[in-house]
Length: 317
Image 1 (cartoon, helix red, strand yellow):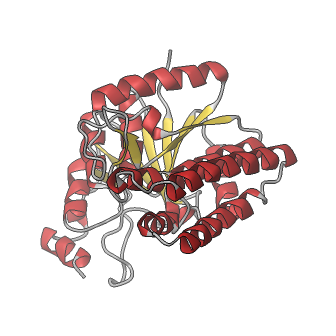
Image 2 (tube, helix red, strand yellow; image 1 turned 180 degrees about the vertical axis):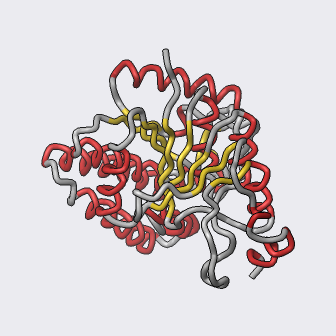
Image 3 (cartoon, helix red, strand yellow; image 1 turned 60 degrees about the vertical axis):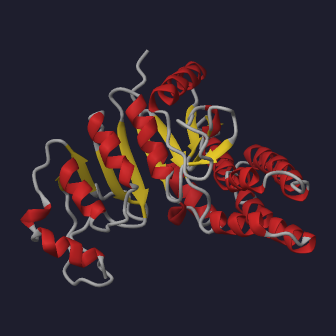
């Protein structure tokens, strides 16, 4: 069975409203064999973090209500009536779960409850993406990452994935979805420990999840849809005449990241290089542009544009 996928990840900065999920669905429809990884909606992880630290019941219920409203309003704009109804019901179910976890956490180990609460941002986003795809006649199925990604230890707040075990679980689950003819929509950010506890892979780690998925599936590619046109020669907020690096090698990309460029999670490059997975960074608002290609056979390097010292100066501002 061919398990090569066009893996793509949509970050929270690209998922802030119903129009964004609709745009993502149209982008996904351009691909022959897509696998999708999603972050939480923009700002939701911060909201859930605040929720995890609240103790006063009235404030807890108000926070949950506000988070619920954001997702329900997004679900209500799904064009297909049947998909809209299903999305609303599944979102209500997740909020019933979240409500029980938060309200009845007294007496439980709050350190273990925190990552469980934080995981709901990606869970909710995956459901929205699934039903926006369904509304565009693209059958999909959500995969919560704790079903397919296992950490190497019991560190629940800064987990490291066990790549071998996770690879086996991913292959097994995606093989089933291929048979069913459904696109996988996978949650980023969290996983499970060997003992079964929900753990998070660290902040901004949904990129790492996407790299794990593509690295596990031989012959796959990896595209990050972001709110930037690609990897650039500097931060355009501070540096004039920045240029997009259209093609760059893994080592050169790693150098940019180690010197402060925050466009990708630090583990993405090494994992993709080890498994020869080509990476693209593309503009969510301008999908016609091909952005930046990161691979083992680039045609240009950062040195074509600037010296290494300049790189560090640009990203330390």
